[in-house]
Length: 357
Image (cartoon, rainbow, N blue to C red; front, side, top):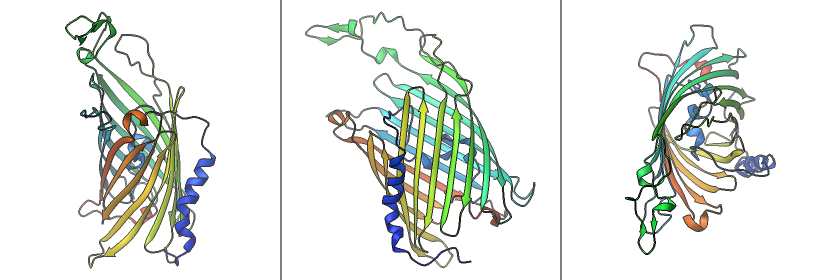
């Protein structure tokens, strides 16, 4: 059967349909937390270790960068930057049976925030096993685990405290802050697990869904030597793919995270339009869409893909109560992903229904 069916005009309306379906399931309130990328799907290892090695190829390399709240105050470039780099690989292809394989990956994240240069450096290793459920290679179930080391640092000397205020002068950092601050560096190990399913319903429709649990060991994180244990972080996510015709594919997705009383919901739609195909069967695609972080920001997104390399750009337009201070400047973000096959290694057909990115 031809994978691409004739053009269906209803396909262009699915951007609205996918968003509408997701809105129905929105909780009453949501709050942003922790490090977060609007393009969460562009770093799949960061939210579910079951994604490790689950793609159509031998290796996947990716980078993400977000410059948050730039120029929120006249004359100042605020220091809220998040960057990530990851690499994951497929192995045991055709070694177990005709449908299963495994994945291993590394993920590095750096985050800087505020005048005190609060910094988080994270290094994670993850592994996953992907089980094929049918001979047609349309249905998969994946399980993954992750081990992460987190190092946090802060410069207390760069912060301002109320007892350092001098009338008619301002803050004087030479005055002791008398805060009884303990340490400026802390580190801990963090564990996570994830489960994911993939179903290719027919030649047009595909469904990806999963759940993960982060901070299983509930590590302690504090600069004051207090017993401040991190709460369990629950994540669920889903993606619905629709292949309208040979040129147009539309993808709707959502991501929901909850940790103690903090929660975050992100959803949106992304379409890609096939521009041309070269004589070497290397195609080009144009990407367009929008991402919405509930009660926080709207992010139009655009991008370009050549063969197995994709670049996506977006800019968060702040819509929350912070918009008065930020003047709508949520932040610039980009992602770059490269998928490839090692020289001399066959790209097995049973991965045809894995995500291309």
